[in-house]
Image 1 (cartoon, one colour):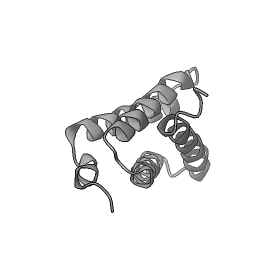
Image 2: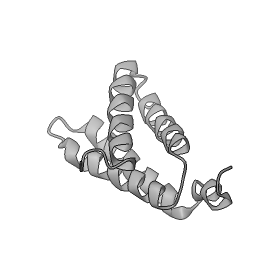
Image 3: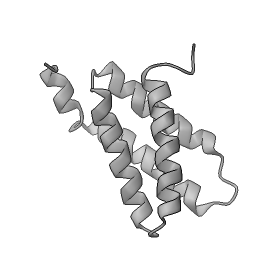
Length: 103
């Protein structure tokens, strides 16, 4: 059974702020031809690490990130954008949540 505190983490201002930072980075990436993806990756990393430290189950984090990418992609109805960035964001989140890139 999951910790009740982890269920509430998704509703916290901190989690919403992390998602907003990821969303801002996604929008910046779409609007700039010279965008550096490191800013987006760092926003995703921070969101995943904070979720892990707050004992948020990874599947809830992934669900929230997928919904965020889908919502950002709806702004221009681009399936290619949605698929590309969903794959990137989820891969970065998994690496960061489980600290795979640090091993």
